[in-house]
Image (cartoon, rainbow over all chains, first blue to last red):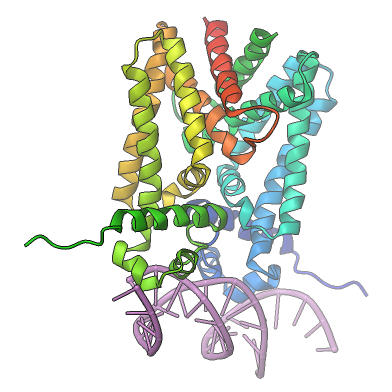
Length: 196
Length: 196
DNA sequence: CCTACCGATCGGTAGG
DNA sequence: CCTACCGATCGGTAGG
């Protein structure tokens, strides 16, 4: 006999993750208790522990769902047929769209990674490394004479430009997320040309 | 009668701030207790409360000491006689040197600002805004036709590049802090030229 | 500058 | 005997 599971299991779990992302983004992981999370979800604390064995597991789900979305976007861009600079532009736009659409998860990922137990953290970091590697290879395709450390540095400067936006960027402001992505890409590409 | 004060008052206070920076950088503000800090300083918890009325006051000191150092470096660069692009380069090098020399404080500033009470936070943010404004004006001096939002965005992309280094940059690695500062400046400047 | 504590709240689990 | 949940409370520790 198959075990039964509530038909809305995944929905409830996702609701918890979304509420946790909002809470942890605002108050930090250690600043928001499981009781706070339960209150926000209008369920008992025990219901949270029915879905998650430990508080850290919730944090992990907030982060892994976000990096998996980024990974999927990167995969889609890389699979396409376009010159490397166009792929970099598509990637930057896709990332910025996800950053804005999942601003809470993005903040939590950037601020709370070190709160994760070692093994769990390694899993997130491994996905992040894959994303960095995608960008690094695109930059190498644009500027093949770049050394390995230089291409890595250029990739990290690029990520700096787009990731740092979580501290200041306003999606309702004078510059749109897409324009910002393009500015970061243009700056990165002209920087590479200037260095050549 | 003048009140007496321990002759090593400032030294002890600075030792507490330095230890707090290390602790908060590693475990986060909320993840490190005042008792942890006392143990690390090899003093009693009450001694900490002799120097600081509240835990948040320690966090504030960690942050204000760091942004004041950056402010002072910016003042020195701006006061000099050099073309704007050279000033930007000096500024980037000075900032990177401070970031590396005070890596703990830098991490705490970037990760824990929202843990500060409103008024205290406003004081830090006001200094940060001054630093951004210095960079924005240098960029405007280099590219006078830049609109106000564009020059702000360019300044934030520049800060993204150098501030994001706290997540990946290794001062012992293949690229030095000075090279990195130069790369960020070159990338920013060629980005401005590319946009013109 | 210390030990001895406080009110409250923490993450996690009991029985039903 | 199961899963899905609840109200209440556990042993420890937080900032002060």
